[in-house]
Image (cartoon, rainbow, N blue to C red; front, side, top):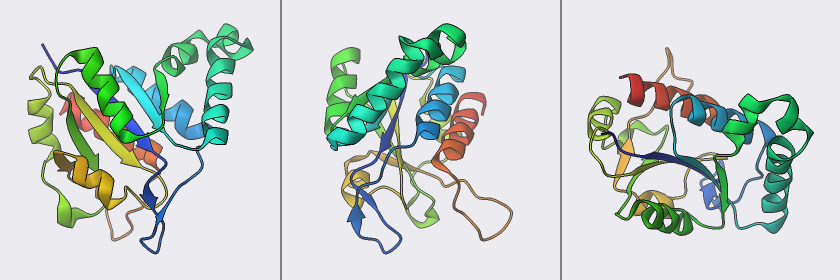
Length: 185
C-alpha cells in the first residue's frame, strides 16, 4: 500500500522578492490547475491556506461554481478535481486535519527553488511514499515559503532545475512536475 498524498498551497506566510514576510492573493488558475494535477495523480486532498476572509470567500465561490453550480453540471471531470480542495487558515490546521483523517502523524515536505536547502531527492521521497505514512507536499506562493513554514517541515524537496539559470516556475507547473516525478519516478 502507498501513502496518502496531500498538497498544501500556502498564501500566508510567504516571502516577497525582498525576502520579507507577506501574504499573497489566490488565483483561479492555481485552484483549478493544482486540483486537476492532484486528481490526475491520486492526491487525497489539496489545501488552499490563507487567513484572509476575502480570499477564503473567493475560493469557496469558485469551488461552489464548479461543484454545485453550472460549472459542475457542464464539466463533471473538473468537478471531481475541485471537490478535493479544502480551505484552511493555517498550515498547522492542515496538518491537524490530515492527522485526524489518517489517524497518524503526517510527513511534511516543503518545496523550494533554492537548491542549497534540499534534504530529499524526488527519487528518495518517491520510494518513501510506498510506506504508509501520509505525506503533505507544501508549496509557497509569491517568492516561496516563509522560513517559519519550512522549519515546521520534516524535509525539503530538491528543486526543479531547468536548462539555464532562470528558475521561477509557476506553482501550478511545479506541483505537476513534482507529482509526476514522485508518482512515476
